[in-house]
Length: 163
Image (cartoon, one colour):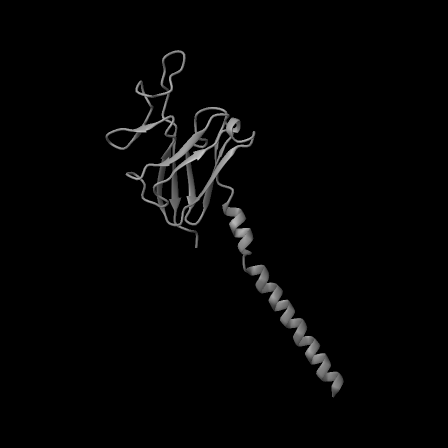
């Protein structure tokens, strides 16, 4: 009798262990989910632009801006066009010259679907229609050939979270 009870107990314990293993494998690890969502990056290379210009992500994802340039840049939200939080963003991305040789970084999380338009206030300003435009002669950065360039800006489209 004692042997049968022990065998049943052992079999039950084995089945419960297998069931727990199957459930653990079927349930995504939260850390793995967060890590998979942190790969969205926007790079400021050693030139005055955001790369990529446009990015599509899912609600709940985060985006990290990385300034590899020696100069400082900013990420400013164009709240008149944006349909998604966060709002009122006006953050400095330090360049490597002002950050001990390390790139400046900023990470923002986008909790719901919509559009996030942003620009660098050093290389763009908003026109009367709230569109980012090149700085121009009143305080803009001008190249040796007289060109004020294109506005340094970008857009993130946030789609609904996958089901």
